[in-house]
Length: 316
Ligand code: DGY
Image 1 (cartoon, rainbow, N blue to C red):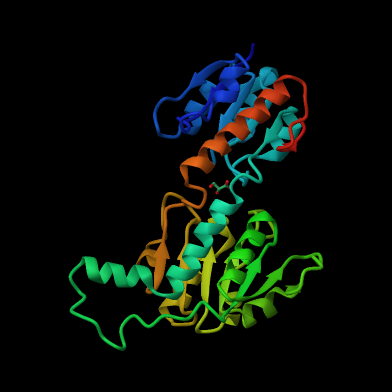
Image 2 (spheres, rainbow, N blue to C red):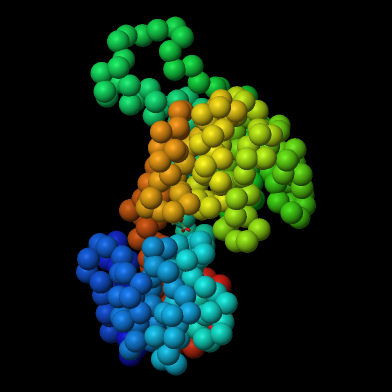
């Protein structure tokens, strides 16, 4: 039996694989993240950690974990909160939750394509605050989604799931990856995709190459009628440049679920026109969040049993 730290309360049933394997649990029963200092203190006498994207798992955490710590499993597909280089140096395996959140996240990305294109948040905010005084033929004129071109940046499982939805809505789909996917609509020219798309949706992981991938120069390539959707990671977009582009009517609208400095939201973005802003809820359905938690725990159980789990990012 091993000791496993679970850094935050997980959805009901999420920790079942750990319980079934008979592991001893150290839990944070608050629905609040540990501070970094609390995390370092909590990790000192455990064999494994199940953590969330709100936990910064860096060399200090691995140092505190010492030789006993064998595996860290992130309840998220993105793992930019974990310093994989430091995990490598410490010989700690890293797991994530690929595959189980693709459709749920794609639903949310498409919701943002629709909501941003049709100015849903602006119209609802007016209605709720009493600023709507009756139907008008020129009110809240959005952009049609059907018949438009969707540019998908990053064509992994989630990008492909968004593309399937777009096809169902009568959109043409372009996608950008570095390597030819062999799928019609592929381009290696990101700038060209930006110039040709009516809606652009981001599905790349955050790393040194994708930080501020969408910056002022690339926003300027987009059509003034285009919308930008980000459900990937906040720092993929330069938020200041995005706010400026919206203020200057350089692009039509934005649908954003992730932010550069969560939970802080850039004040200029909060005030920018024609934005739909959600609080990082891409995978937030009961079924998906439960399955994500279980998959992370299954990774821990496998590593502790000396097996190689399918959701291994780094083998330790
Ligand atoms: C992930 O899994 O990376 C998401 O951002 C969490 O929903």
